[in-house]
Amino acid sequence: MITVLIIYLAFRLKQFVCDFLLQTSWMAYSKGLKGIEGYKPLFAHTAIHALATTAIVLFFAPGLWWLGVVDFVIHSVIDRLKGRLTDANQWKPDQRVFWIAYGFDQEAHNITHLIYVIMLAEYMDIIGTSLFF
Image 1 (cartoon, rainbow, N blue to C red):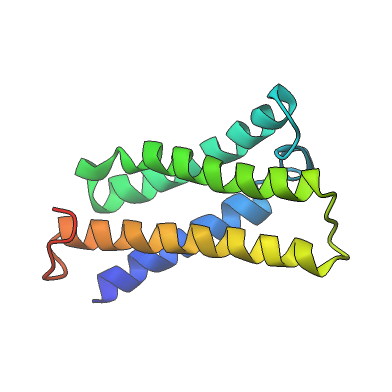
Image 2 (image 1 turned 90 degrees about the vertical axis):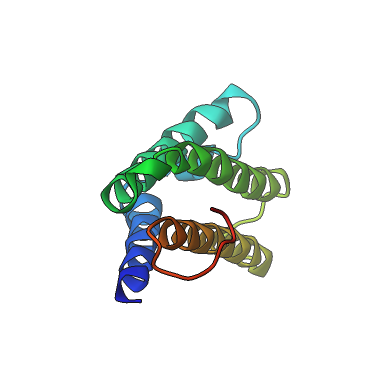
């Protein structure tokens, strides 16, 4: 089970690095804008996440390489929804509702990563379930 914990921690580290260290102000503040002005920073941000997910997956379970593509799509949807919601309602960090939306965003990513961990663990035959494979 230590491998499962290591995989989970790798995904949590990925979330921290990609969302807080590698995400620029342009990405963070613009990904909720309408049209192409919002999609450019969104996709730049989620491509970084997808590459990091791909790196983790290639290390532990190369046969699941496609999870990087899945992560790009899922992360894009989650961030776009939160971005559009906060931008359309002009929610700012000094408002409680902003932090509620932010918390839902982070938990949605955490749940996504937990599903990836289960998929990798099952693929690697670490756990005795057959949820996915």
